[in-house]
Amino acid sequence: MGLKMLFGLILKITYSVTFSQTAVDSLLKLGNSFYKKNDFVKAAQTWEKAAQLTENKLARNTNYSYAAFAYASAKDSSNSFKCLDIAITQLGFNDLPALNNEDALLFMKESSRWKNLINAIKPVYTTNPKAIKVIDKDVLNFWNAYDLVQANPTMAQKIYMENYINNGTMALQFYYLNKIDNIKNFVYIHNLKKKYYNSIRANTLKAAKLKPTFQKSFINLKNLYPEAIFPPIYFVVGKLNSAGTISSEGLILGIDQACMSPLADTTELNAWEKKNISSFKNLPYTVAHELIHYEQNGMASDTTLLAAALKEGMADFIGELISGKTANERLKIFAKGKEKQIWTDFTKEMYLDRAYNWIANSDQETADKPADLGYWVGYQICKAYYEQASDKKKAIYEMLHIQDYKKFLEQTKLDKKLK
Image 1 (cartoon, rainbow, N blue to C red):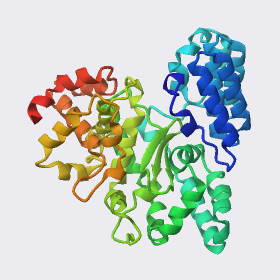
Image 2: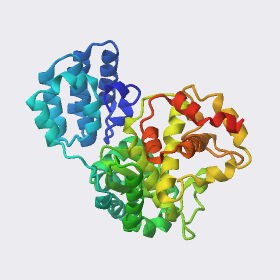
Image 3: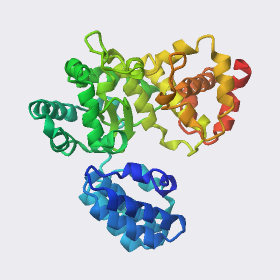
Image 4: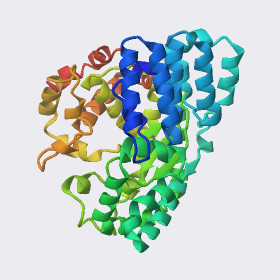
């Protein structure tokens, strides 16, 4: 992610896993204000200082990369290279798409120093779907920490931070910054749902054994979309608010939100959790969904509801093509007989910045209406586009490279079908 996509996300992405975040937060906000005023040097200097004060490795490399982008915007290649060198060679920054897509860096790309830095980055992904890696180190670390906490519950925050979070993979660091965010709340959720966590332990330890099933989906995608790349799959334990996400490290699956089974004790779960925690047997569909998100870096940036729905619905639709089912089958069940009304409601907001009413809106779920209906709408749009295409591979490619979301929708003629 370059500075083109920075504003509004920087504080979330770079949140440190310490309890003293005030100074870093202030510097990030200050740097953001400088950048908006086109004072790129001050922005870069401020973000560089924030990077020096940030303890978490992932957050530090992200901050250094932003400082590098800002220095480049000021045409200061020397300091930009300095920050990139720290981010890449010392802190493991490996987000090649961010480097390749950042316009500010264009004037630096002919130098030998640039080529040496890029060559130092080893992509985490492979082009061979049979060569994927499945990593559950963080799950093992979690249960080690969990057992220590049971013996000494008053030290839960310290134990989880030292033995789970800080001892985890870079994927877990990303998941913590973006999905967990707060160790106090993490401990609170786990204390509140002890029966559930105890009951899913065995399933969380089986996730990596499904690798052959994941491989089948990945091979199917390669056949549909030869340009596909295949990142590692990481399993982590969160706080029941995210079943999966993607990062430059790969696919990150919150396995505790994909472990429902007849043996799971759901007595402590709320209504949304009971409906949205996926069955363990459906885990391959969630992995397939996240894989499609990983392929979507060729799509245009857009803040409309339509764009957000297409990205999520596309992940469900192509995920279904390669794995057999979507990750959100309950939405299909709900929508039967209500298609026209859902579509009418969606069209009222689709060109506005209103994704929060249709995606990740669990706070709006009721007994009569599920959250996340934007997924279903996006699925229907992508399905209509695919079904009318004579060249299916080309259709998949075009979906993953949408540049005009309104035009894409118009080409499906879905509006006429659902009116």
